[in-house]
Amino acid sequence: MVNIKTKKCRLSKYFTFSLLIAAFLYALINAIIIWNYSDKDERTTADVAIVLGAGLSDGKVTPVFQQRINHGIFLYQNGYVKKLIFTGGFGEGNEHSDAWVAKQYAEQQGVPAQDILYEETSTITQENIRYAKAIMDDGQYQSAIIVSDPLHMKRAMLIAKDAGIKAWSSPTPTTMYISFKNKMEFLARETFFYSLYKIHR
Image 1: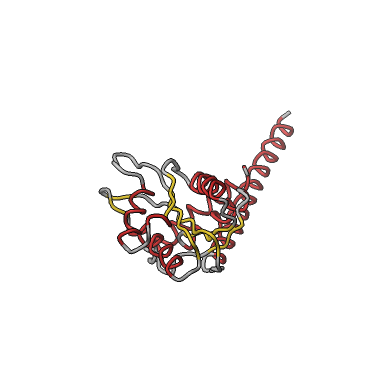
Image 2: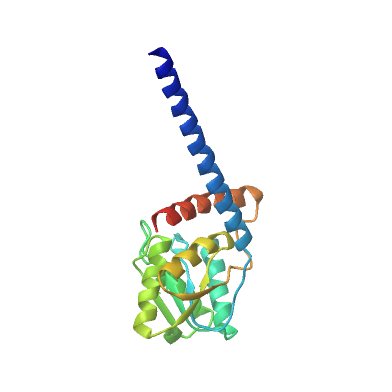
């Protein structure tokens, strides 16, 4: 009886250890994929640029969001896209949505209001892209450049593919995540959400 219990205990420990090793390797592989993809800029001419939201601070765009908006404006002003789609809903305590504030910012930088589209209900990346796709469908836009931070691009592009968007990646050329610590924290976060999304997609 003791031997049977001992064997079961050992098997249970071995199984648990094997699962942990498998999970670690899965996460490690995904982290490498995310890192290697982060500087992949596929910019080409497309109908729209989808700029993924990144929150507000005191009612103004955060430095991270500003980098994304600026890159979207660059793509528009240099003829890569005809329209900008800003995404992002209402953060806690904010009077305006991320997307609306981004729209105002872009207009101040010279982008005509008629070339700016936006959605105000998304709170996560999947919703950003899903609602942007609805805007594309309404306007019969066929292709998009996805704009976000470099380490966010792999997950964003996978979601865009699953949403049926013909898309190319164009990460921000500059990012606020410049220190090693910030990069590793962002990479860890993206690895978790990317891995989770791949499992449940």
